[in-house]
Image (cartoon, rainbow, N blue to C red):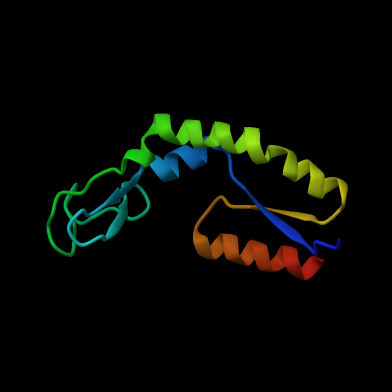
Length: 111
């Protein structure tokens, strides 16, 4: 059947690892931070409640690399499948969220 358009957000493995391993979470109130992109005011402490921030077990480099391996193994062929059918739009996911959204809008407008 007709699948319409498929958008693939492309990001290098290094960028994925940096984004995911840099996430920090407050175990007390659930607030989220990132060591590079959204650091807390005081290193390692939640801005809202002051609790010590943690790195989730699924955000360690070893776990992220394993998740990427499984992704490539189980879904990597889908990119080629949709490319072959000329329904794939690839958008760079590098940069700030607003920049990625603007790139997405531009790509979709060209369709």
